[in-house]
Length: 587
Ligand code: ASP
Image 1 (cartoon, rainbow, N blue to C red):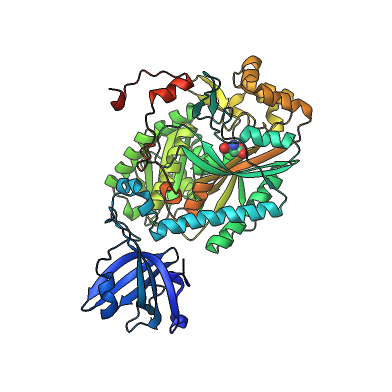
Image 2 (cartoon, rainbow, N blue to C red):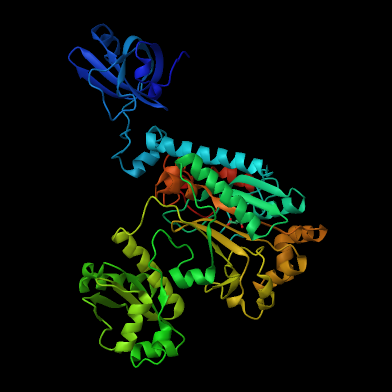
């Protein structure tokens, strides 16, 4: 089909040229005997003018019709500075109506006012909007840069099965029934974890894959049942080697997509210190306001409330904000307290304000002058500073103050949105206690190596056993997880045992994997980078559906194709599946 130019690329230099363009009609205006249309293709919009003689040929043309127009580029009398092509227009000499279109059920504009559900039903029309097209192009660029950078570093892209055996990553599997072996099931991979480790045993040394992962998790606003990971695994490495590859990759991606230069080395902090300082394992470092443990100040306190918390193994933590004391009335503080009580189990929120060199606030009276002076010093409080204090068990006090830190920073605009603050959180706990299962489970996945010095804690002190798992955090989001893996069969068996799997159960689940370990497994480690999360940060959106071409809703439905759907009984029969569930069709 003849097409000489892309619409959005035409500029003043093109004036005088004859061009042939194609595209969708974005907007039509009649002005006396003239007709103006904005013609849209993927590159953008250009204004086309139909004069009296041509106007008759487009009298029936409406929005979203497809035209092929040949015409002359000319300077506009009144330039439109809002359009990239706003200095010129195309005077039509010939036009062909390539296709007609029904009236669009959604507004196709950068800022569509149509509800998200309707836009999801007509996703192919929503995707005509520039911001969504830009996001898909950005995602494509990230993948292209990843492939180039990793190829240059000697990584090989390998595809692993989608119909697979289940890999435990802590979520539920999506199962696919086997027709040939009725009663048996494939699982869609939660990640290619076992396969990539097998590739290391196979001697591939450096593997990557832009891998689709499937997790049947409870509904959450920022989750999709399927998502993509930039999955990486390397042999003969330690943490430093993995971090260096990821840092180089991130630098290239940020430089080449949004022209941001990242710090030479990313900050690292062990998990335990991170929790103490920020009350979160994914802190936003674009602002300070760290948590301070004030407990030593109250070692001999006469204030009964603090005394009894400290006696029960708790601590008194505080976060301080300069310049905000006058913004907090009792009412606003009460609201903050309700928020922390409801979501973070913190029993009480105390506060102190510094005004004209004097501390006032909910605990100003019961504390001694020495204690108050020590607080001012520790928190470096100046006039108009406000400190929030929580006395509770350490994990409650820290996570509540961590949440308060983020909430106040957002509400008072303390965040510099032009910054990209990366942070490696290292030495995650090896285990976490599952209240549901009443046992210790692997905090990352059971192939993660324990810290060498903590191997003897595997059975005796699971709570304090650290692992070689790490996360990369960016601006408060977890961008990736990974770990140095176990490569020793005895240690792998011990870890299974420590999470309550008998050797029989472990063999039943991953016998093939344990067997592979016996044939010379190199030390190895890697990461899985959340591609959607990374794209969201770079696109500046908080809605995961903005960076996925065909997403599901928050309640895991595809409104466009109406999936999941029921299937014919005959389809179920060959799979050997009977269901008691009544569907509208079967009634
Ligand atoms: N498979 C892990 C995950 O999905 C990533 C990794 O450990 O490489 O989180």
